[in-house]
Length: 165
Image (cartoon, rainbow, N blue to C red):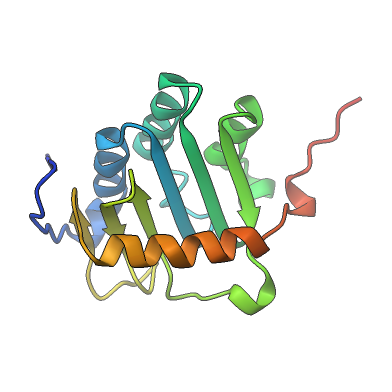
């Protein structure tokens, strides 16, 4: 599936099977920031296209702001999740934080690029609908405000710490 998003407010509704491609499309269109919120680090965030797009954004500028907020790791550490490996290789560019228990919400799954681009999959992994737009006002800024609030309260995960000898 080929998706193209621009600076307009066209709203796309990709199929659930194309969720990774849709998220990667949003990330590729991003110039400076990506805030990703997921209930669990799973197949969506372990997608090759998604991880390659995050890596490209991270290496594009020292000022790139990539924040990934999740409720649970699931089996991500045990199974060798690509995003965890990438964040360990680029720790100054990609930050992962785990939400406080009070902020856990299995319905929240979204990504915001440059403050207005939006990928939303509420209810992931079984969303009723996927939304993708390069410029989604006022929804993206509202979710961005909520993301910032949860980010400030979030902390690092014990399981993500890497043992270095």
